[in-house]
Image 1 (cartoon, helix red, strand yellow):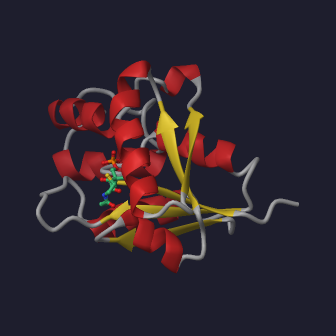
Image 2: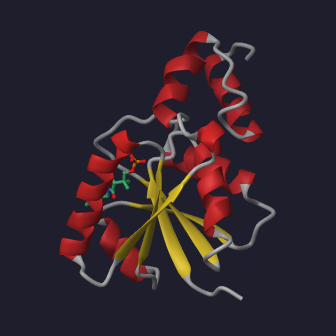
Length: 163
Ligand code: PNS
């Protein structure tokens, strides 16, 4: 039985199949995944923090091992407040590595007791990103293979086209 709690932070604007894949993989190693949705008032997201949380909650409603929270400020503070010392991030391609390594090292500098774990998504999700979804969905492009059904419906409502 796995008991460790891991924090999976991100913008999740919106949740993609890549994120879902990483959560699923993490649950084969960790006991609980806390999805930490960044609420950054200086950015204008496509979905508000409340909408993002609601979509993630709806997708994972059957799984009591997944908890969804918002956070602002420093991630390491949120990790400590939630009684964890593990940050989980997904790596898609080598191009992700620079940014991810910078964040991991910065977080380690801020709190040496916090470790960052990386997991890779399935191949078919390796190119999927929230940014790509946001580039395609407004123009009616089919994103149904890239996002969970609940997010697909929310995008449809937002942009009012069939996809
Ligand atoms: O999904 P994203 O946008 O790549 O996630 C980035 C996120 C939310 C993990 C990162 O921006 C973050 O942790 N922000 C909180 C501020 C912080 O603690 N920064 C220090 C680490 S660089």
